[in-house]
Length: 206
Figure 1 (cartoon, rainbow, N blue to C red):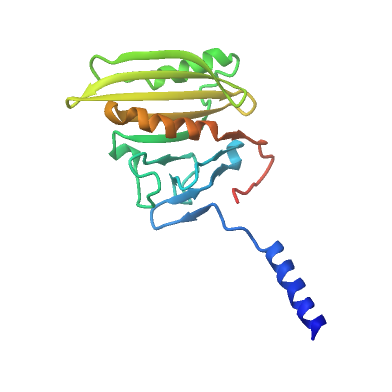
Figure 2 (spheres, helix red, strand yellow):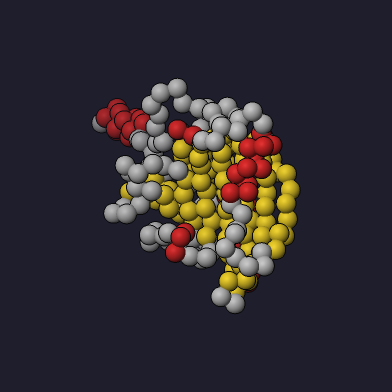
């Protein structure tokens, strides 16, 4: 009997050690939800998410180009679309399709200018500075404007990865009254950025 009990304990321990960890993403009817870590093997990066924070991404077969977080309800699993809100955190990745790869500075200047707010009056450039994102050259651009009598702040960080011609962009947009609190979460997400290897074939985000 003693040996039978020891055998059962050994089998239970082995089962616990080989148990597949819970996935850090799941699909709903409309989107992909990320917790713990967002992964994008095609673009060679991941983002460690603060505990409990939910990232909202596109559902397959739509392309995996990043995720958004609702800073008003960062733990919510309800569908969230940044285009429907003036308060959001967005992480986005894309290629340098204009082929500005001959100059990192020129590439960053070009894509930084594409994000300028042209349809708002009296936009105030709060800050423009160089930035380092996990060793990548980057720009940080901070703006303020008034929309429907509400002061809005935006903080945008855009980085260029010369190998592969890829850009990574982090954006926080928030009403001025909630900006300070949202900025803390934003920088925790930015600090979670991790570079990985670029794929040479098919890869997995698991």
